[in-house]
Image (cartoon, rainbow, N blue to C red; front, side, top):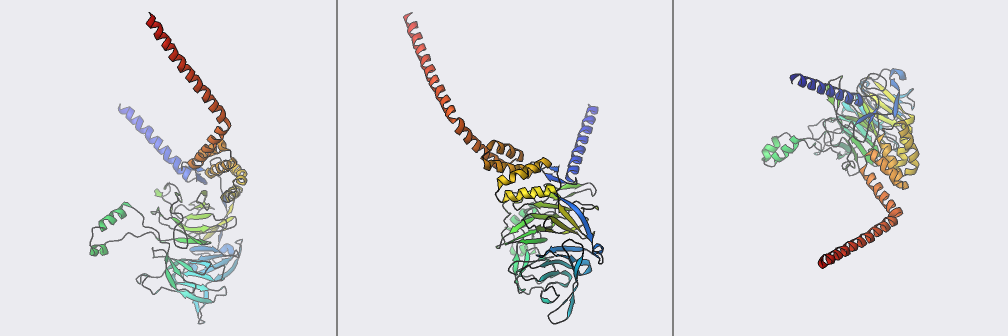
Length: 493
């Protein structure tokens, strides 16, 4: 009996190790995606790393802890080279430096230098450059000739905690000239400023994570005195790490790996999160186990970028991954990894897109990696664009092409099911909806198939039912008549 137990234990252990190994391999394969069951499966690459560019490659001194990248409306890239206290302007092809911004002229004619700038953007509307000049505790607003229009420093208002220092890390400006800043020590949302630099409040704060401890503290607080409440440590939300703007919406992300709510948000003008009611998981579906570091790793987004076509690119600091979603939050591709080779990252810091390319800043390698869309990626994007425009029939051919290259690609099954449903091919729609695990599409297709079936064969079915009913009535009458005759016969006896 003891030998049997040992064999059983050994078999179970081997099976467990094999299972863990399979999960680890699948999760950390060079290219993977998720199927309808939420399992990581090998997939075709949507993007491939083309080159990694350093400061020396561009003919200047090496980058030092670069932390941000921004592509202007005229396709010039601006890199916040934080450790070198400068902003670098680079051409579209990332082949040469156009300008190095390390000092500016103040309105009074004096010269001012940057000190660890961590964020930069350029307004398409007014052509001004906005710099999160972190260690100088200011946001610098200047024209492209280095003339400072004004600077934004710590707000003097009751709304802003006077005990907090002013540490702008990222900066954005909308079409109206309103300025938004991520502050390093603030968790109440992004600071907002008018086009003239006046502080107007905070925007888009994350919700407090509803942990067991937070719920317990809430109920305890119901029975506490005001004095005890004042002394008690309060639950605070995770702060916004980075953001991007697309039309009238601002997208935000957080790098807190313990945060499950509000990891990625789409905020309207009122600060309401459009994604709050959507059932979507950003990043890896389940925490991944990294064998090299011997620890479980949850996705933590350090930057977010919205492409020209509305795709959402999220940069995961934990595993060095790029997670790309369409505008409806359907997962399209996963690219990158945590490694020293081309296409891998040591400390991913920022992401930007332009056309068919993605640009990722690594603050440890001090490089910008350029990813280019593959043929497979182009086919998927074409199908997705047609699908999201409601042109399902036109999307059908590229979706089929996607499945030829990757039979596991989940979204292709959804796209084909939707197209076939619109075409009235209910049987085909049911087939692909089942493969996609989409109950909603399957239900609609089944209703259509049932209606179509009844329309074609309903007359025969009803006629057959009528014949069976008449036959049943005749049979019943005959049986009754036979029983009566039998009773009469038995009575005569």
